[in-house]
Image (cartoon, rainbow, N blue to C red):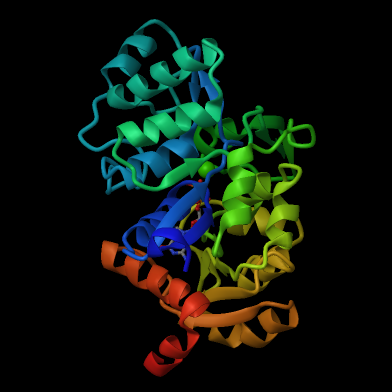
Length: 322
Ligand code: GDP
Ligand code: CA
């Protein structure tokens, strides 16, 4: 245990799946949480810079998230979008009125030359988030999806096309030249435990680990490293990770996840329903840990987070409870 008597836990997280894990870890009194989020979903809409995964983390940890849809702000209106629509703008990207306020603020500060990571930190503070929300890079990195109709931006694929087109190839524009933020490197280096959330391995976690220096820092860390599978009973809870992995020739199950995190995580939490995959996961070099990994309630999130932290720091206690 480190200063202030808390375990320093660093979570790599995308949007909805990542935010659930973040909420679980944030609920533990013995954890000081840093979350390294994904910026590769970011894009420009109506002249404003929108950062969907970072905002999902902020809104979730700030407890203003729309709990029904898992993203966006609760008690939201869409009058600004109505006006944009009336004016002939493309409004397939659902942006609420409260949400727009944050995008205006972010864009204003970026135009002023402020670092995106400083803006994200200040926004999180203003929303009452106790955890550190850290950007992997201050440079622009954007996921591109090649379909049979050509290259799409990530949001065109995800929101406008509702993930319908077959994915032929993924690219991360700007990733190779991106520089890691000092905050992200420090969050990895200082961590007593590194957790990879059950986020989409291809478009949420890969663009974080792909920022030059971050995967190396994770590999170099002597801290326990634990991943959680986004697959339950061979299916994703939501989103296109299964179809994407299949289309790209990877196994669309917890074994495929283990393959992706080989060398980056030592243990992989999988669902009881996937217990039969344990041997194959071990063969990939990760220790499988069976649990209930569906997080529907705040209790589910905190219980899974507790098990992860106990596996890292009190394994005997966990076995005693098993
Ligand atoms: P996005 O950026 O909003 O798409 O969200 P993420 O990349 O963070 O997470 C998407 C992944 O989270 C999907 O592959 C889901 O299967 C997974 N997921 C969502 N809810 C849960 C859950 O309760 N438990 C687990 N294990 N995975 C989940
Ligand atoms: Ca996302």
